[in-house]
Amino acid sequence: MVPPADVSTRVSLVTLGCARNDVDSEELAARFEAAGLTLVDEPADADAVVVNTCGFVEAAKKDSIDTVIAAADLKGDGGPRAVVAVGCLAERYGDQLSEVLPEADAVLGFDSYPDLAATVQRILGGERPASHSPRDRRQLLPLAPVDRPQPIDHVTDGPPLTGPGPRSWRRRLDGGPMAPLKIASGCDRRCSFCAIPSFRGAFASRRPADVLAEARWLAHQGVRELFCVSENSTSYGKDLGDLRLLETLLPELAAIEGIDRVRVSYLQPAEMRPSLVEVMTSAPGVVPYFDLSFQHASGRVLRRMRRFGDTDRFLELIESVRARAPEAGLRSNVIVGFPGEDDADLDELERFLVAARLDVVGVFGYSDEDGTEAESLDGKLDRDEVDLRVAQVSRLVDELCAQRAEDRVGQQVQVLVEHSGVDGVEGRAEHQGPEVDGTTTVTGHRADVGTVVAARVVAAEGVDLVAEGVG
Image 1 (cartoon, rainbow, N blue to C red):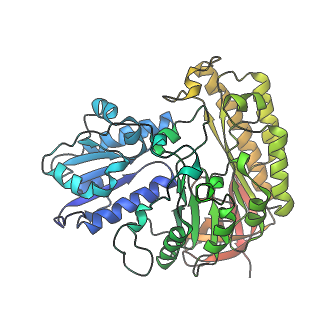
Image 2: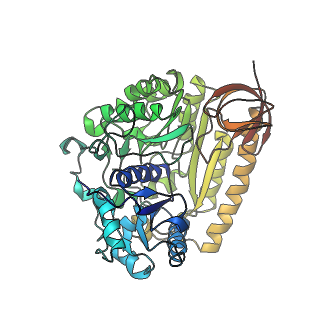
Image 3: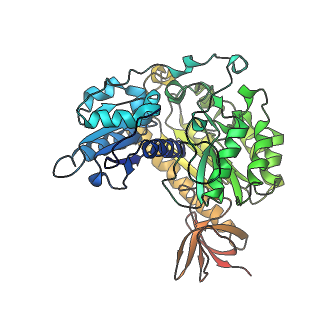
């Protein structure tokens, strides 16, 4: 149990990276409040700044380090007295990061989270805890899911928050009508370019009862859209003995009173199955939104990535989705400039993108990640060549995604209102995921935030849509 703290101690949480980090920060925020600390929005107003870092790609690492330094620059003259780095970058590099980032008063890993409130207090008292020592977190669970113990969900360990719901350490930091809901953590796949499993650990599903309980609590907090997040959502349930558990969970989430829609992020094409496609395209309240991690389309490159598929197989999957839901949203990310990628491979990727007609595509240039298999592969491309390929594919993607948005002109959409103004409302249609997939503006319409309004698309601006209210 975390000891009570002086209520005058102020903490600011700065969150970087993905929606999974957003959930982690909300759990930390609830722990801080339960321990008696006061949360403040601005780092300059805090006694301690806790930076929840991202360690995914080079740009995210740099952003995390810059944020820690910027927070440390506020020290003195009434600003913060301590800056603490947590999150993926801290977990991944630990004491190594501490050596190159003396601006941080502590660099702490995931295991520090249960006692972080007390640790922050000790740091403010002058103590300097030892920096986290990284380890391969995949070794913390048996390799075979069937041999793993029933996971103990830390979200259920704390006292209840205000209102009905689970015993939860989570405290919402964003009052919007959408909230991420973590259904699992970690990953068992061994993609040659990815280091995430080494610091996020082996795949572990949350128990359905805990997921549903937290979802009901979120609905009580005013959430209308649940965004199911994990490192690999298609694996949900495999360590609980039911690989099709997601097909059961999604309709149950959508049936919760107050929840208007449920969407799922990060689907592995290699693990997609007809039963999951059917649920995601037919279950009431489950939006037909497919965040498919293709990464490339050349079979040769994908094998070097330790991944499944090729252009034809991916197009078959997309066709199976659109056969059931022609207006379904499909998005993906691709990596260009992977070691050994030649002009024919790049042509094949572009052929796939043209045929796939995806709504949104994130384009990333390959860069070595510490400790990955790809780091030692031959056929590395010069950085300048990688950048040229990124620019080439990005231009194509911009054109294709704008065309896909234009195709939606005339369609009727359901828009979850996230901002309301005198000239209309702005939100997201069912095919648009949070933050990265564009928005829909409904002009000349009045509605409260959290309302779902029917509208007809009249124009497209890039991937953003303009619509008029219907009825």
